Image (cartoon, rainbow, N blue to C red):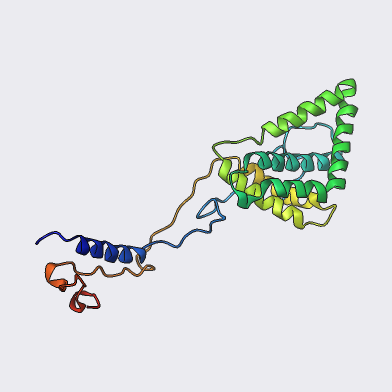
Length: 224
C-alpha cells in the first residue's frame, strides 16, 4: 500500500476524535487539586498547643488574642507565598481582612502586647517581637505549599463573610485545619472506572475501508 499524507491525516483525525471520548473531565481551573486533600478540622481553643507558641499563664482574653494573632499571621504568610495563583486572591483577601476586622485585630495586638509586658517586664516588647517573628516562620512551608495555600484561601474567604468582631469565630473553627495543612498532601488524581466511562469504538483502518477520496466507508464506521 502506497503511503498517503491525506490518508495519514485522516487517520490522525479519526484517532483524535476517538481519544477525545476517553478524556477525563477537566478539573476546575480554579482548583489546585483534582481531589482536595482532607485535613483535620474541628474547633480549637486558644490554649491548645497546636495554635502556636506557648504563652504560659495567659488569661482567657489573652488566649483569644493568641488564637486571632496566629490565624492573622498564617494568612499573612499565605498572602506572601500564594501569589502564584490569581484565583486564590491571597493578597486582596488578606488586605480585606485587615480592613474589615481592623478593630478586633487591634484589640488582639493590645492584649498580646500587654501579656508580654505583664510577664516579661522590661523585656516584654522584645519578647513580643520574637514571638511574632517565630509565629510567622512556623507558617512558612515549601513542600506543603499547595495544600496550605488552598486552605488559607478558603479560610480568608470565610473570614470576609463574618460580621465585624467575629473573626474569632473563623479562627476557632479553622485554625486546626490551617495547621494541619502544613503537612505535605498529594493529589489522589482521577479514579478510572470502565463501567462509568463509555468506550468509543475505534474505526477500522484497513485499505478497503477507504474510498478513492480517502473517506472512511460506512461499513467500517465512517460516513462515506
